Image 1 (cartoon, rainbow, N blue to C red):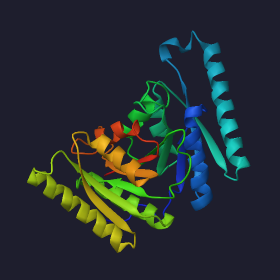
Image 2: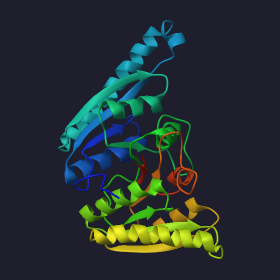
Image 3: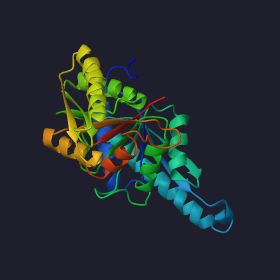
Length: 283
């Protein structure tokens, strides 16, 4: 495994926002992240349109454009007052998740930061369903931040691994972030039953690989095999128990979420925890 990020931080951050209260945690975390580690920020929002209706709704389009401009101007001004320079970007399209991913490519972002609506799943709204789609389809790491999660991790990072190739980048990123933040890393893998030896052996091998890598980097590391019918529930309970303020997991990020262990598990996890969740992307 090679390190995929340097200096423990992401240097080019895309903040996908709609200016709502649900984006406030993401915005606050970006400010904290940049003030601690440096980096550039671009705040973006999509102006949505339907080509079939565009000619009939010119006034509506103009109003939406102005609202988005105002939102981004206010966002940049808030960041500037906190000492963080923020560029802005408006994109136009039918599908906000696609515009976010295209914006990330346009500015060459190495991290997409988004908010989340509520704890009980992902609402079918701009930063609800859109967040789920970006998490599923983006080729770049996505950091999903609940409204109350707007500060950089200071206590413990929880890494969920299943030993697949999609987990390897997550191991690297969790290790570097823990090292540069000077906090411990707790590594977990979930099995439905400890009595099924092949699953238990695979989980223990996954833990050993992650612990070996992190330990070689000088990170204080603990590990545990968790048992439960719902991996997302097991991870959420462990995060609460150990006081983790960041959870890291992997996904391939091309045609959807990985189906081995992570992937749909990470999506379900988003609605169950109060801390930020970083979905790393395998190649």
